[in-house]
Image (spheres, rainbow, N blue to C red):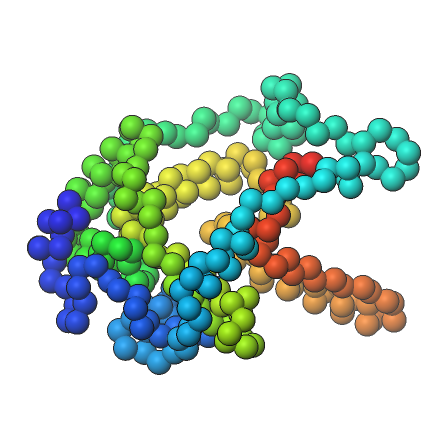
Length: 277
């Protein structure tokens, strides 16, 4: 289908079917702005380029993202009692916890039926026209090629039915976004992966369905604000402001701590998370 799209849809001037990141100029941006900035810069915008040799870049990120281990002995309780059990969970454990989080009336199971054209069209409409993956197809191309999302819905449902995606979808083009500091320090560059838009459309449809189920059945903790449709940062800022205002009004002391974990997703082994929880 991607080959047909490349023929049917007129490519933007100066863009080939397989985008090249050679000489791509990348500017300073926040993670939320990164994809948009890449899209603007790929079409001739100004930015910063990484001059570090490719072998050094590869060696750096192989080291940063290498699997890590954890000494779970650091997690025992300090009061002399037995350490927190870290063995496998039993069905009764999960059932008991779910019983406290989901309303007494049993919720509907996660809907795993075929997607409708309206579902795919709604998700496609929320995507911005950022730089595509290695196939060169943007969301704009899909909207022009299949405005009713009939073909796209068939593709998405095929992946859902067979519970797998084409291997080519799992490949991504990685570019570096300059943050701040010395440019020769690769720690000051943020890697951004550019995946195929068709893959992200499929994942987005599944995520929408799962998020709706989690929200409806109140499975997620109310403390979680990230990775949800609503921007929880506003609620956090409002809560913090109220706490500070209350402290000033009553001449009280309040301590606030921000924890910024470097390379949080890659540096913390899953074993540590399981043991800590």
